[in-house]
Length: 331
Image 1 (cartoon, one colour):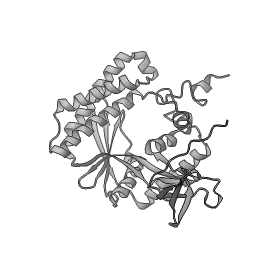
Image 2: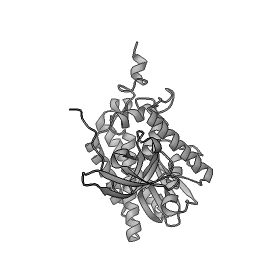
Image 3: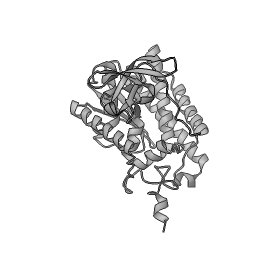
Image 4: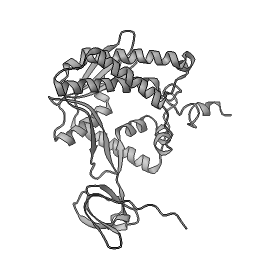
């Protein structure tokens, strides 16, 4: 007996797409506004179709959930289509790099510190913040493992981990003493899903930080000084600004990109910026182009001279990707 695809059970407000076999409305998008189930157990869904607002009754089997593109998925596809393919289509999850674990752990400590300030009016103690960062790094390292680059492998995991702990403690302390006192937090790590009408996908992610005055901030850890126009070009800020506009019905008038720069003497660098309506439109065009490429299976590799195309920055480069180092040694 042939295997049948399981029937999805829809619920109210699900965002759906009409399947190709329903010729008159194939590919249309909409929201489920009413559901009935027949005596035979067949689900009938009333869908308000975009953009005309037509309400049409479909069999549940004629619909599929509208796909959601997470901001991190968009960012990875922008960097390298093949890395996206291995991560999301093939499900090959590579443990994070050491730099990524430092960034994750610094973010955790900053979020807990700012949440305390928002809820109580006071930041945590300096040692508490540093301990949170250290514990998060050790927890992540233990639970997920870490992908070491060639230099880190040569140095050894023990020493690499020790240096990572020193780095994350210093960065968390820097944020606590230099940046956190200047911030009036309102929303911290605010998740979102934006319904994109007339688009093949909805957009999801997490806004790093919104202040009481409406300023939208994003925190980055980095090993080198950012370019002078990093904030102006940041797609993350554009995405978060679009999400904030959808959530709050007003676009943020001011955005800030905060860099915690690693080094012997870690330092804070903040760049401020804004976004225009044209920049938001260009971002939406990018989202649509990426979603169409993913749907078509067009996973193009990045250029071999791109910074990410190396063992240091891509976990697929050494042994998995046919365009990586494996290709360079194949005769």
